Amino acid sequence: MRATVIHGAFDVRLEDRPDPRIDGPGDAVVKVVASCICGSDLWPYRGENPVKKPRPIGHEFVGIVEEIGSEVRTVKPGDFVVAPFVVSDGTCPHCQAGYQTACQNLVGYGSGKADGGQGEYVKLPYADGTLVATPEVPDDSLVPSLLTLSDVMGTGWHAARSARVKAGDTVVVVGDGAVGLCGVLAASRMGAERVVALSRHEPRQKLAKEFGATDIISERGDAARDAVLELTQGVGADAVLECVGTKQSMTTAFEVARAGATVGFVGVPHGVEVPIGTMFSRNVGLNGGAAPCRAYLPDLMADVLAGVIDPGKVFDAQIPLAEVADGYTAMHERRAIKVLLRP
Image (cartoon, rainbow, N blue to C red; front, side, top):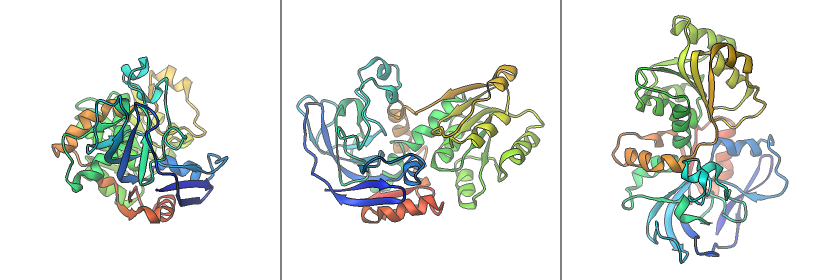
């Protein structure tokens, strides 16, 4: 099969890899229908996370089950499935509590125990604890939205849930990538009255409005803080979604939060400093982390299949898997919000 392998900074290649096969009774082999490039894939691509040796990459995909191990019960060959961005056993105490990203037997895609997601096939263990099947094979038009449930829509939802968004709230979303845009959609779906998106890019601003943003602020740093405070008569936001993971984005998130608010953070932290003094003096909370997309998948899948939400609009580029290197370049250069790959 063909699969994407990262060799180092700005060096992504499509290579021939061994065809996957069932190794254990809980395994499944999935033929990939669609996969995509994640913003977090750009950290190693840019060299900010070291790549010590070539490795398969990609952790978001949907597809058709080809083969299962003897003990798999929840999916069968022919099922269309969504795969969350980590493999979890579904039975450990953390999985049972709804935090599958902290599974005691966590497996990452491309780790050797599971294939990378940006390929033609993926073999993974713990099929019962990981994969979620649709009631029937969906129309192809639904594939992009179902694909977002493997990561970005679930992560945006986790940001909103962690920030304790409720009906009538004023919510600020820091970050206009796919996760931030899905955070806008999540906050709107949860009943927020006002959703303020921080974005400097016109196509992303437009999509944020489609997803429910009531206000757009194009400034950054101190200017963004001042603009939010002006919008809220000096009070700040009831809930803040931090969807980037940088020092500046976290600083802005706390600066625009009103007293007693919660910052829901899902951006992978890089150089972040938590302002504990501000948290203490203004009773601002911090909650979040790696999104347990598996926990949210059934409800979000129902919303997608019912046409209630259409998060697949975050894919503004769709290319063949053979052009995956060009997809990475487009996202690195911010010419694309999120790139969908078709094998």
